[in-house]
Image (cartoon, rainbow, N blue to C red; front, side, top):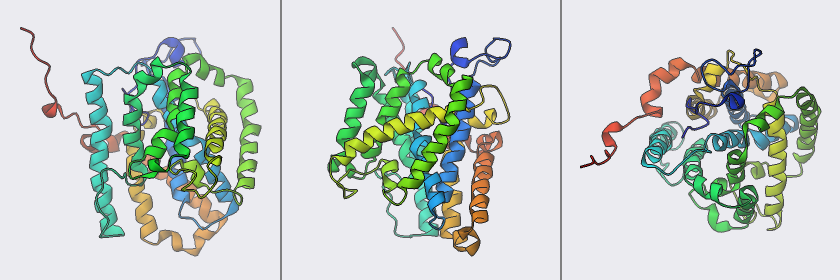
Length: 360
């Protein structure tokens, strides 16, 4: 099944794809809405990562908090939506291995070598402890494998929320494997499994788009209020409440509040995503490239002292970093980069695949 970061997408029905002004589905069979959403979301991911090394400032931290509330949940929700037909067949499992696990192994090696050359020559290679942004690939692998479970249980979203809440009070899940993130982000994947085309069509209504503007503004104000009062680590969903040095009850409470906030802000974000084919559509088919490659650029600039210049302690410096991150990840999502690096990020590995037995 397709990753939300790759170009693959099941051929949608007319209802799933939306309609053009003539009432017909897109002529190439793809739902351009989701490609556009993936591109805009990957821009937010890159901008958020580019903001991390900036000098502390309350407004930037508020915007950072707002983005981190919903940008990964949107990716994960879309992944769930396009995993509704996943089955544990050998060909589907092989596709998971080549599209998620193999790129993970390759880039774990590459990022480890990169970090050793630029920062810490002693950094150990650990395939069970993903480097920075690479946690998403093994997480998506396990979510996809769990799809049949969520299609079988009753009230799957509520059950997955309960699992996420329990994870926050389970310090044993704070180990090397990204178990906390796998479990705490799980409800968004399960929610995506339950969504239908009409839910996304609802978000495209004019009144929803109008209402989303003040909702987003309110979200920014709340984030601004929260900045000195809470840790942004809650939004990373990678630690238990004990690891956060808070009372256990705050973990389940944060799980529920963050889920509601992510769904509301994610809906507001999706309401403004263009539904037709445009300049960003082709870029949205290559977001895996932008996601895996932009970390090299940002970490190289950070380790090279780029952010230590006084200019980046100003509002203009923040604007420059924001624009630069958007341009950088856009370039990395171009088809030219995909054609050059496709063997690394989308390996077929047919030579390693076991052939089905020939019937007698």
